[in-house]
Amino acid sequence: MADTPPTSSAHFQPDARPVDEQLGDLRVQIDAVDQQLLALLNQRAQLAQAVGEVKKLDGSPVFRPDREAQVIDRVKNRNPGPILSDSIAPIWREIMSACRSLEARQRVAFLGPIGTFSEQAALHYFGSSIEPLVCPSIDEVCRATVAGSADFGVLPIENSTEGVVARSLDLLLQSPVAIIGETSLLVTHNLLRSSLNREGITQVCAHPQALAQCQGWLSQNLPDAERVAVSSNAEGARMAASNPAIAALASERAASQYGLHVVQRAVQDEAHNRTRFVVVSHLDRVTPAAPTGHDCTSLAVSIDNRPGAVHDMLVPLKRHGVSMTRFESRPARSGQWEYVFFIDLAGHPVQDNVAAALDELRAQCSFFKVLGSYPLDVH
Image 1 (cartoon, rainbow, N blue to C red):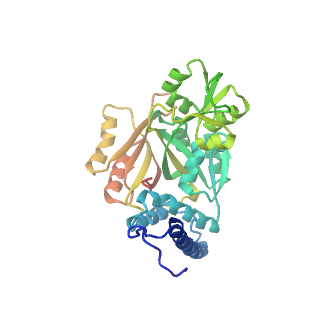
Image 2 (cartoon, rainbow, N blue to C red; image 1 turned 45 degrees about the horizontal axis):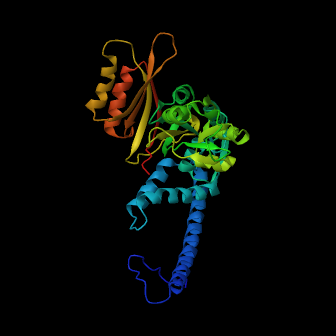
Image 3 (tube, rainbow, N blue to C red; image 1 turned 60 degrees about the vertical axis):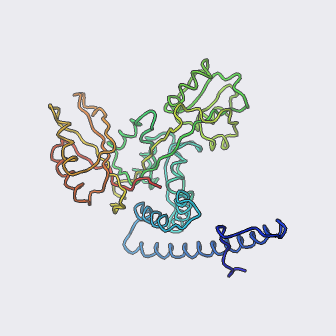
């Protein structure tokens, strides 16, 4: 039976046999295909182990996000269906995560406790075969990554409703880390509690960003409840688990983790509320990424305070046809009303037009730092 080709659902037609008999035959075929898949997965894992042995000869890194992005692109482009292309990336990411862990289990730091969206972002980007390092703050995420107790750190960088996470920008500027990847999550905030109704809620505990993203719903539905900012949404869930008067704004994963009821789903004010995360590593451990065709280059720059300086800074980008996808400013903390500009550019420095634009831009800046060039999250 293992050599029997699988039945194509596109050509399968129910026949006159009893339903149980037809289902039985199909399930036997599915079992046979599962066995073939398992054999192929183990064959792939053996090849990955061989790759790991070769990498040891020159100290090549275990994790190459540019290479994995190219693998996923190629598989998606060759997908004949009926599996949707959007389903391919998470399947292959888990396969590569499992194979990668045979070389070395990646240590990934993120804001805890377990159940945060930062944890979800880490799993979405790396797959589940990682060694998690749960941190009490994003400052600690960065410290762990710099110190080497984590290979990578996951930092929230911006939200589609509330804008940038200022502390993450400061850490990128001040720390010897580089961005090696990004991921974006659709963030759904749920009202969680130890009981099934909203009666008797005196406090709603969540991260300040979550409270801001749900302020309209809270004002309308829980106007008398105190809004208490805590270090993370999962920390709010942990508090709600021990106090019936507290409700939390967090994910369904946090509800499961802390044994809470989902009293109300999707209480965020914007239905398409997304948070973007960046993945960072210590500068000394970063291998320059090869271009993938859908890359981002992130910069932090400062310019002299003179009329037209910002306009002049942007001219090289227009001249060389480089698209700017993000432009943020932060105080330079010099006490002189000076600012640092955080810029995302579409493209990779090996591209001639991007390289030319960067050279001209660097010449105009009093401070210039490439925060990283990395594949965009298009999967």
